[in-house]
Image (tube, rainbow, N blue to C red):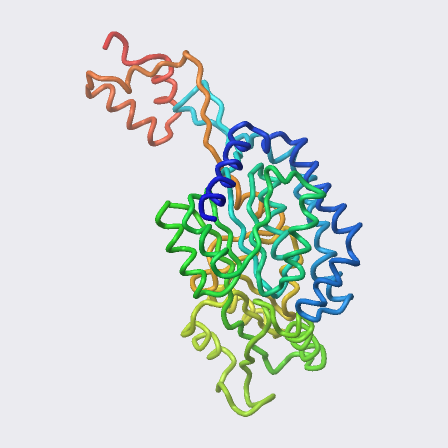
Length: 391
């Protein structure tokens, strides 16, 4: 079994090395396939989600199936992302051009979670494909219906020679960790997250860990209580019946609304900072000073003022943890970046030789070099013109 897994990964490496996953046309075709699958197989997907976690059709569509159009977001960005991002070159290297080339990492492993078994599988896979990688997806065995459906459907809609689904239990999750990957993306609890990170460290493999933590809600006494209560309830029980990593876990308020917890609402900041860093922190208040203090004082993966949970619906914002709640981020463009390497490329011609950079060194050369490092235009011109002459 281990030999077959290793052989499968080697096959993916061969496909990646052959350049199969790099062309923009290939990437766009796979993303269109994901969109088609979500559209054509929505009924079957909703049935699987209901079988696994009892998710009603409305939640299944809004929270998981309907999010698959996120595949169109990286697809629309392909033309602008895959080429180079150009930057100004410094006079020190004149004449030259500077750019960052986004290149795929290689063969990546995505380990998904059970509470949003479709979304948490497809979201990172979409970004990995858009970035040009070969992918192995391991869906959660705790959501067997969705796992089996993904294993059945994905090969029908996308290139199964470059994107594979591996099913199974704990052993099928831990065994791939012994192999060499170019990135591991794990969503789940911190206990397994530590195992993933320790295994990755053996190969110096970078990781994204989407974990969790206890997400606090601070409620000031000056809020619209009716709206506040509805939004907290929606964030807690409206998101998968509370089984969401960004669901509110506890409320801190003053005696105005509850038995006395803190004398002053500002004391809540120290209480939150005494705990492990949460994946999300929420504040309800009309006080702009408190909002600014909350934002500057509290370290959390994400933050939302006067609502809960909905910040993750914005594809222009990164979603991820800090400290115990995870490392790395994704969503939209950030998923593409998570599975890419920004390669620095500086291109020079053969003109503009600066004699001052070469031995033998002298006080005249040092003076020019100091001026160049200080950004003095005159020194740059002297260096470009080849001063000091004859030395």
